[in-house]
Image 1 (cartoon, one colour):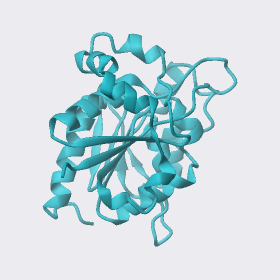
Image 2 (tube, helix red, strand yellow):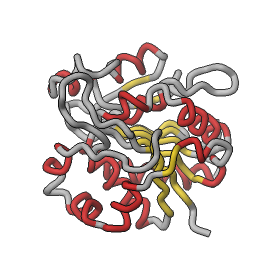
Image 3 (cartoon, helix red, strand yellow):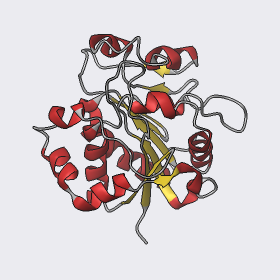
Length: 239
């Protein structure tokens, strides 16, 4: 039986009240998905509403020089999976079927994955069951409200990264998102770090929590997920 990884995508395609389109960011799904598929994992896609998970159209142009992303977007099997995602609710109580739960970014998750109860339940249960929890760019917003059985926040005291407040200001979206990711993580007691320069790659692994900062981090983020799964199986990541 193939080992499975659950990618949780956004169902949200509007950027606040700006009239701009958003969704999941091409590279942040395609790069880690490609890496993990090559490592032999079976990929399963979910979203809050199920069905078609909207792609951030701006991210297609941004990825034109990234062969893995171009190939992913042209792959009919992957496109079918993205257009027919499972509802996250289906996986409540089924977290043991997966090696990792992965949240790609894009601005969409800021609107529908911060407080999504089904996603929070699946993520908490997966982590408590010894699985890897991973998120890149804006994806880590989905980890910020995850509470463990002892009532503490998953990210408290953990080394993490994610889309920085400076990067949000650079793209002039800081007034459109409900909350600033870096600020919220710091408020929760997460040990947040970022690359020395905006848009530089940065991936942080803390036991079974893997986070990446931005699109440039996506390929290394995929490899880090695989490494964390391997470590968890060998008992090195139990904290």
